[in-house]
Amino acid sequence: MSDRGRIAPTRVNLLRARKQLTQVEKGAELVRRKREALVGELFRLARPAMGARTEIARQATKAYPSLLEALAAQGRSGTRALAWPGRTVSITVRPGFVWGIPVAEIVDREPVRRTMEARGTTPEGSGAAVRTAVEFETLVELLIDAAAREQQIQRLGEAVARSTRQLRTLEQRIEPALRSRIAWVRSTLDEREREEHVRLKHLRRRTGGA
Image (cartoon, rainbow, N blue to C red; front, side, top):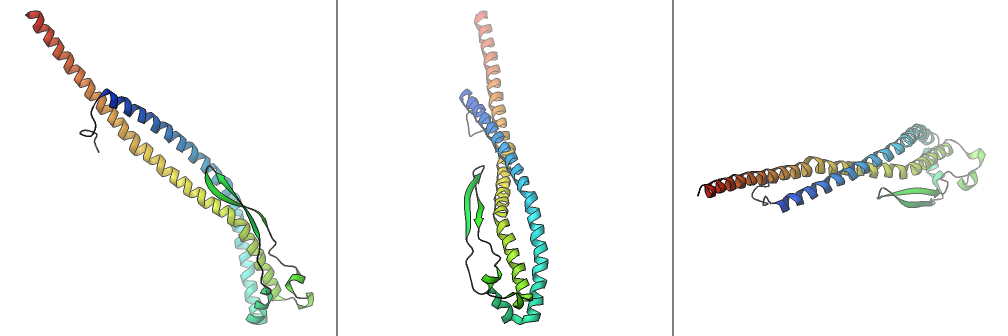
């Protein structure tokens, strides 16, 4: 949208627009630096996250076939018995911030894998169901350990996208609009000065001729 008709082409507005442009340029630079820092942090977390996802996928390919084997050998009731007794796994989470973005970090957790005594079975009684329980408990541990990192990656990714939108708005909309306003006001003022100069020159000529 053109500034014509909305603002007066005065020197005050010219100075104001130049000040706003300086602020926008500084703001864009800050957003650009923040985005670069966020991208760097995102890449730092991405490699271990990819390794964790690979390990989770590998463990899942071991756990689910083991479950089918246990169901075939001991049935649903025999397999479900290994889940008893029920329990709550305690996890200690520490809140933190990365460039002002709230994130969480797991600093401590109880082991998910149970000992044979805690499972309530004997070595002689262990079989496919016990192996299945161990495989899934290992899978749960991997998922818990990866959860905080995945949340950090998600929030960092959202912050990078948000910073990119902000930077695009500043560089492609606000900054060009201010530059256009400055050019128009300056051109209008220059034109007025030329007209005033011509008018004064003509007035002097007439006065001198009088």
